[in-house]
Image 1: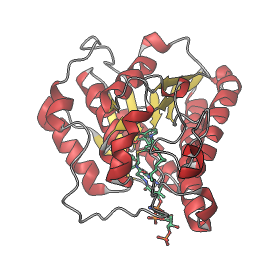
Image 2: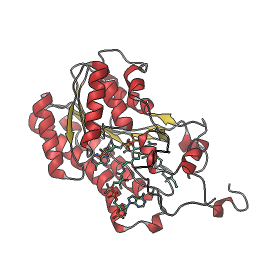
Image 3: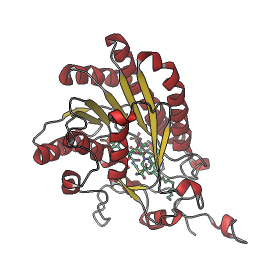
Length: 301
Ligand SMILES: CCCCCCCCCCC/C=C/C(=O)SCCNC(=O)CCNC(=O)[C@H](O)C(C)(C)COP(=O)(O)OP(=O)(O)OC[C@H]1O[C@@H](n2cnc3c(N)ncnc32)[C@H](O)[C@@H]1OP(=O)(O)O
Ligand SMILES: NC(=O)C1=CN([C@@H]2O[C@H](COP(=O)(O)OP(=O)(O)OC[C@H]3O[C@@H](n4cnc5c(N)ncnc54)[C@H](OP(=O)(O)O)[C@@H]3O)[C@@H](O)[C@H]2O)C=CC1
């Protein structure tokens, strides 16, 4: 199998299909949850302008929550804000923020408290990576992925918790990570960062229990979203073949799990990792987009 050494998506390539759930889907898709399940809750979702974060924002608003979203791209945030308003008549709060910048994170948490009157649940969903063999990572590339997924998530968690401690109010943190239990070739940087977040979360679940702050992670498998643009078409054709259900998940699968943890049903769940991957971790090869020839020669186990 020929594998590109570097794949850089072209933002102007209009030939690639648009992936992920549409705004109409997000506005009307059936949910198992009660209409007012999150009524009164204030929820901040990082990376809420697209993909799973956007789905979680739509669902939370539909279930009565006050929602804030952030991301780097202001236009993306405004588009999502307008779509949610059109679907529900509810205005969400947006603030463009790079989670890698601790001062911007400080401002974001302060704004959310000022504008929503507090914060009940923080969903750290912002993140991502590019596919590359680890040996070829540049220093800048490695640092970009670690800084976003590990440091950025940490700045958010720490700032939210400091405010909860000062105010003496309870808190709930849900970190979206990835399914890294067996590693993932061509995504070693993200595996390192996500493993860091998982064990940070397990530790803080205990350390912050006296503050009445719960911390959990959700590990999605391959979930079809706008973020798929980071991967070549050839690789995308193979993703579902590495799954025993021969399917990809969708953003709603993850949005409903976030909702479960944000709701009173999650009250006694703390320090855990919920995997949503259709069983991929239990089966098959760890290369989501196919193996190099080395592993195929003579038949892989
Ligand atoms: C062949 C395919 C095999 C795939 C198998 C493995 C992976 C499967 C994983 C499947 C499950 C996970 C799926 C998802 O997560 S989908 C969601 C994806 N969404 C995103 O990733 C969006 C957010 N991502 C980003 O914003 C960026 O990737 C990044 C996290 C790096 C953000 O950094 P920044 O904004 O600083 O990025 P820059 O563009 O400035 O780049 C900084 C340096 O990083 C290196 N780089 C960046 N892109 C690539 C690339 N495509 N290939 C190689 N290296 C890259 C590079 O050193 C950049 O610096 P220079 O531009 O100066 O060279
Ligand atoms: N889809 C999948 O199969 C899987 C995804 N994941 C992870 O789930 C999360 C959501 O992914 P998904 O919805 O698929 O993809 P998207 O690319 O749609 O979402 C990623 C979001 O993160 C935001 N983001 C990235 N970097 C930063 C930053 N430095 N500061 C603030 N916001 C940032 C982006 O917004 P903006 O560009 O505006 O900054 C974007 O909205 C990501 O962490 C992803 O890596 C994990 C496993 C599998």
